[in-house]
Image 1 (cartoon, helix red, strand yellow):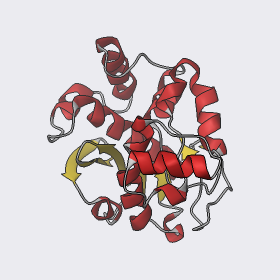
Image 2 (cartoon, rainbow, N blue to C red):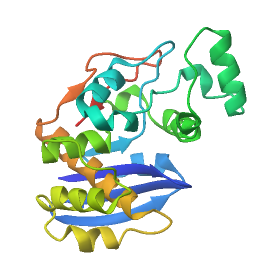
Image 3 (cartoon, rainbow, N blue to C red):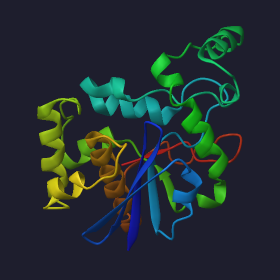
Length: 221
């Protein structure tokens, strides 16, 4: 069983391809190339399925589960924000239609969301799923972990992943640049989700809800 975990990182996408206990890495600017891999399942840390108005219920549910780490879940952008040329334009448009504004951080992933939205289609439903690393680590550890940029948070994530990959520190160290160390751990957490999806063990938030394109608005962990 080959599964792939994908993390959107600065400048591109990091993928951890996992065949049993073996992990191989790839980094690319083209997310469509990763979705085209001959994998049984791909779990990706980026919104799939975008609302026309309001918030996705899966995002709201993810925040509730994460408690103190709720701020790590951004609202998926409205679909009509994707083509807008700037953060200022996005905020102005949201104000014009009476919707909540969005943070600069949330707008920062719009380009990646747009690229993924162009690459994925409803026929991918059974194989490509949206994941959120913080939810994955919550499932692994049974509790929210410390922020990933801290030494404590990094150690907790390595410990959680070691149950699946005992030599996790060595595996993570081989991830290609320009991906950061925490990107590698997030990609592996997504691969863990993809494996659970294939085994029928995953928990699905927002199951059954679809956007205007027919894409599922769900988060799998």
